[in-house]
Image 1 (cartoon, rainbow, N blue to C red):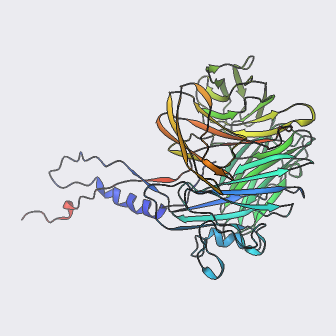
Image 2: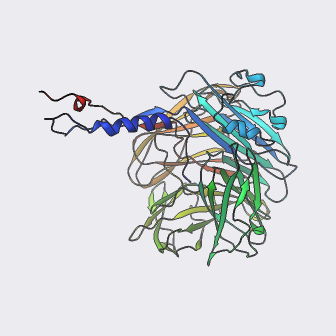
Image 3: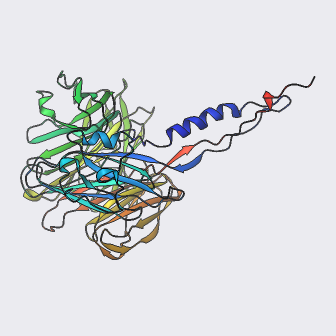
Length: 522
C-alpha cells in the first residue's frame, strides 16, 4: 500500500515549479549550480480511516489517538474521528473548514470527548484527539459500531496515529483484533486471506470523500486468478463503508488467497478481517508495495505456528532466500532455504515454530534477478482450544519516526530489526491517557538481528500510552508492536508493524536566477 499523506501538496508543487527555473543561468555563467537538498517540513493535514470493528454483539472496541510532538509544526490544530454513516464521513474527508470542530462550528477542546460519542451515533465524533504528546481514548460496543473517518490539521497532523483494538469474548473471531487506522489510498495488496472452510474473511472498504468511489476486488489463489464478476465495479457510497464476504466473490475454496483492491475512481481505506472458527481472528492490513526485498517484522517469540504467504503481481516468477533475523544473527529456517513464487499465483509455506522461543523477523531477498513480491505471515500462539492467530504483513521501514498508540504497562512487546547494518534507535513513551510523564531509551540493534527491546514506561503511568521509534543512525530498521490480552490463560494477541508515520514531507529548496531576464548590453 502506498500510504498517501494529504499535506503540503500545493506548496510542494509550487516550489517544484520554481525549481524548474533554478537551472537557468545568466550569460557567462558555468551552469554548474547545484540545487540545495530538499527540506523536511511537518505535514499540515492528514486523513485516517478505521473499518467497522466487529459484527459480534460481544465486541468491545477502544480507539486511541496520538500525535507526537513535532519540531516546527504549527502551534494550533484540530482533529476528530466521526462515524462514517449518513454522510458524516463526507464532512471529515472534504478538507473542511469544520474538521475537528464541535457543535455549531465551535472548536473542540484538546482531549474532549463528545457527550454521546461512545458509539459515534448521529454524526457525533467518537473522540476528539488531544494535544500533541498526549494520547486520548474513545470506546464503542457491540455489532453496530460504525467505520470511522478522521482528519487532523495543523499541530495535530504530523504523525497522527489511531489504534483500533477490539476484544471479542467468544464465537468466531474471538480474541484481540487490532490495527492502525490507515490513510486513504488507491491500491492495496492483502496476501494471507482465505476462502477455506472454517474461515470467514471480509474486505472492509471506507470512503472518506463526498463522492462515491468505484473499486475492483481481485482474488488470486494457488492456481492463479479466482474468477468472479461480483468484485468488479463495487461502489462505495460517499462518507460510507462497505463490507464484502470473500466467499461470496468466488465459489472456490482456497487456503491461501491474495486480495487486490484497485480503486478506479476516488480513494478508500481498506483492510481484511480474517475470522477463524478454531484460532480466533484479527485484522490483515495491507502489505508494503511489491518489492524485490521484503521484511516481515516482529514474529512473537512464542509462536507455535507461522505460515508465510507470497504473491508476485508481475509476469515473472520469483525465487527468494528466506532468512530469520534472530537476536544472535541471521539463520536459515530448516528445509526452507528458498521459496519459489509462480507469477500470478499465491504461494503458502508452513514454517512451523520458526522463532523457537526467540524474537524474530523474516527477511526475504532475491536469489537472482529482483521480481516485485508482496508477503505476509499468519502467526498462531497457544495450543489446543486456546489458540489465537494474528497477521503480520511485510512492512516499510521505520524511517525517521514510527508511532504505536495504545500500549499498556503489561502486555506490550516492541520488536526492532536491523536486517543489514547496525542501527541506533530512540524509543519514547508518551504520557499516559490518564497521567504520567514521558520516558526515553536508546537501543543499538546489531546488523542482521532482531531484538525485543525493553520499552520505557511513563513514570506514574495511568491508562495507556504511545510509543515512538526514531532512527538515530545506521539502518534501515523495521519495527512491530505486539499487544497481548489481559487474561494470562488465553493467548489472545495482535501485532502491528510500525512503518514511517509520515510526520514530515520533503519539499525541495530552489534558487531562482532571474538574471537571464535582464536586457543584454547595447
